[in-house]
Amino acid sequence: MGELGRLEALRLAGLTAVADPGMDRFARLVTRFLGVPVSLVSLLETDRQVFPGMVGLAEPWAARRETPLSHSFCQHVVVDGRPLILEDTRVSPRTCASMAIPDLQAIAYAGMPLTDADGQVLGSLCAIDHKPRKWTEDELQDLGDLTVACSVEMRLRIASEHLRQDRDQADLLLRASVELGHAHGLKDLTRRLRTLFEDPAEPTFVGILLADDQGLRRLVDPDHVRPVEAAIDRLDLDAGFPSSQAVREQRTVFVPDHDALVAGFSPEAVAGYDALGLGSVLCVPLAGGRGAVMWCWPGPHVLTVLEEAVLTAVAGYVGQAVERTLFVENRLSTAEQLQAAMLTDLPAVPGLELSALYLPAGDQDMVGGDWYDAYLLPRLPAVPQRALMLSIGDIIGHDVQAAAVMGQIRSMLRQATLGDPAYSPAAALDAVDHAFDALPLGPGATVVHVRLDPDGGRWRLTWSNAGHPPPLLRTPDGRVSVLDEHDLLILSNLAGPVRQDHSHELQPGSVLLLYTDGLVERRDNDIDVSIQEAASTLAEHGDLPLPQLLEALSRGLAEVPQRDDVAVLVVRVTEAEAAAPGEHTGRG
Image (cartoon, rainbow, N blue to C red):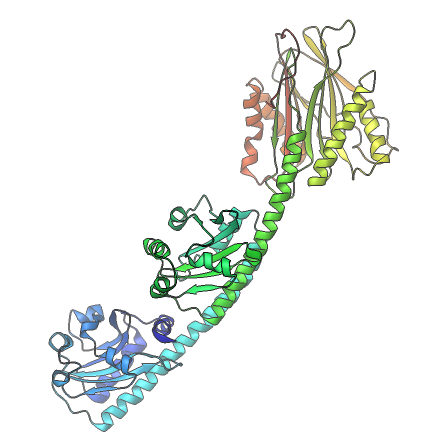
């Protein structure tokens, strides 16, 4: 496994420059059996030797429990893989220049190799004397027996850590399948993936790159932008980076250390990883050339077979989530575009102010069914001003099909209204009932259909409600009424009672609020309670300009997950009348 494997075994053993009771015990046994002043359990790291087990070392080394390699005889044991036995270190060509002689008074030295289960030498169990010494056969036999026992102890620790990591990896795989399977959108997917790897022993950085026409773009959680994302947010597909290679060649690319990075990748990649303090990386491609998932560590990393298998499986879950999210986002975009194209530009009407709001669902599966409409009726003889028709509705179902049905119903309702000489809202809804009975338009819809007729300085409100949440009416004195008269929703069933028109006189300063259930429907709240809350908001803010009133009504939506789309249409009767009606583009 090489040097990286040896260092990984040291890491798993959990022994470093800190006193360990078990290792100190072996050091004491060496001093007792061999009668030496100093004994060490010495483990060789990259640039130092550490003493988790120690007896008799002078200060300041005793407190530090480490020395640089300039003071190490242990390094020769590790390199040779066999014992180093010296009667006088001062006369040996390999050790005569070592700083351990003047600083540690290491004159006689006997060190035996400590090994893991794979035979890798991790360090030495050594006896040191301050004067020359001829080591006896019995002393070396005792030191060898203690070394075997100490190696067994270290192997048990490594095996225990392996078992713990195996359990952790299994737990990670289970959590990944659940967490990533519930991701809503690419940002949420990135956030959930990183949450899986927040332990200090985990990779320093975890990220997703998606392929597009320009190469690879990094998915970024805007709430937690990492330095690597700010520095390298996009890569060309032919760039000399590990992630680019993984996507190009559709294979896993693992870079274990800095030397491998320099040998296999571009100077730009090396500079980028160096600047970010990253020393190793695993890149797993997503199926179909969609991109790659990458895990980065700050230094050299040994990738076990189990770890690679688990991370590859996690990348598979990421790939499935990406496919699902892109599919839903594409469908969402289609539904939103279709729906936005069908939302009506509000007309300019003398004596009335109109404003509307549409908010798409936060849940990508819940968009497509809510709508509003507003249009002027033809001018009647001897009537100086045209009446206004308003509609707001919700199609049962939320998807592209619902958006398409919504467009059909809106057109049918307009045609039915204009085809009725009385312009009766109830008669128009009744005509749509007949269309539902004859055509495959889906399970149904709810609608409030309204006519506003000018009457001097006042307006006459006539409406019919097909199972929709009730309109709210604020009178000039600030009181709000719930117009809760309603009939059955629109269904492919003509056996219900005859639809009714209802009327109300609107004084100047009155505000009429039409809305869909997305404004008032909450999982944790009764809809009647939510309607009363909306009525209270209308009462409190009804004198504000209409855009500000809409903002006040929708403000609470940001505090809860928005599972349904929302349409709101608000009308205020004004004191003054404009000169002439005309069509006005814009939705308020």
